Image 1: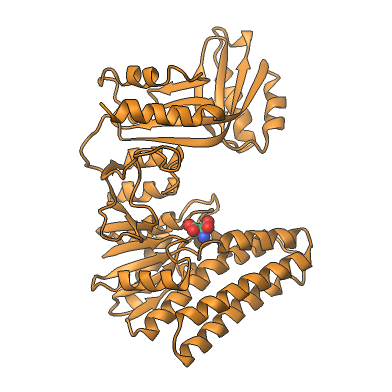
Image 2: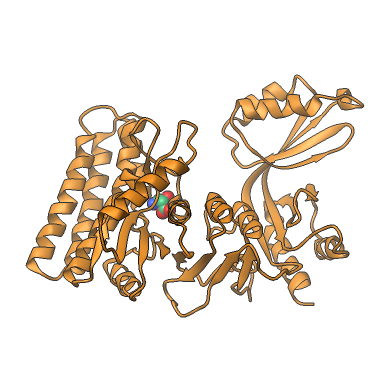
Length: 438
Ligand code: ASP
């Protein structure tokens, strides 16, 4: 059995849904996990925002616009009278549900419910299309098996038990369609696995069913050696280790959701990134036993803020770092990079929501400097300390780029530097030229 996940652009129009249907009907037993059609979740977020602000006109306008798009999709997707009628009924019921939230002020639970409509729609539309084409498939609701606990972490035991039970009930099953992203929380309410979470759904399902492979279908032919939007002549990497994939996903390679690697790694299930626009391309295979490569890829993560805390009190003192970290913990702000010296420490964060409060609290311990608009540039590969010369090549490549922070040795797979956003392109291009051209 396999799990195949298709992202929003892969099911972004009636035509694309038809193409995915043709792809999945290949005789192999599989679970197909779908995102919402591209743009839908963003539109639903906007609707929720209008409702929070009690701007009912704004919300209703947005709902009507989105509904119109879905009527069009139904019209293009389904050919028979019966199919079209079913599709129209489906769209009406989901949009009437959305309109039901315009009567009273919404809360967080309502917001989650609103956000869930995109995946509920895309999967049912796919099921209707498959039925019309007489392709045997079953639609199961992720709300019946996908669950997070009270800490927001997937409840693996619950997922495994309930997903296996759902599938058993189907009897003979060939194609099973379900939603990515959506789940229930510990209180049984509709929730989600965070934006972009459909990849996570796919690997959680893969681990629960102990499948042979999880495939993440997207609109690029795999994880690239560098950001193809910025650097020329990048190419898809044929294989990656789980650890390298996790580093790349976290540090900016948008193609994979960072959390999705963990369930696959723990269950040791290969993950393959495939391109819906070029299904024959081999893509990128992520496993625990891939061949090693000194430098595998380069990624960049934007929107980083660096915070430096300098203190005479740090000299020879213990417990200083704990106090600093506790402040970040209190504001639920995670730290990406960290460098220390005897008189100071620098950390970088990607979420500056509580920056003012954090800085205020840090001032108890020393003087604080902020550098915003920074980018983490991260080189990923087999970078164990015994591999001589890699750091030299990296810094030689970056000799024209001012470096704010350097991090090496945190793992065997990553060397990161922090640079001003204006140097991002220069750094990415220089690294590509120096590390891949010899
Ligand atoms: N539809 C959700 C989002 O846009 C989840 C996903 O596509 O992975 O974030």
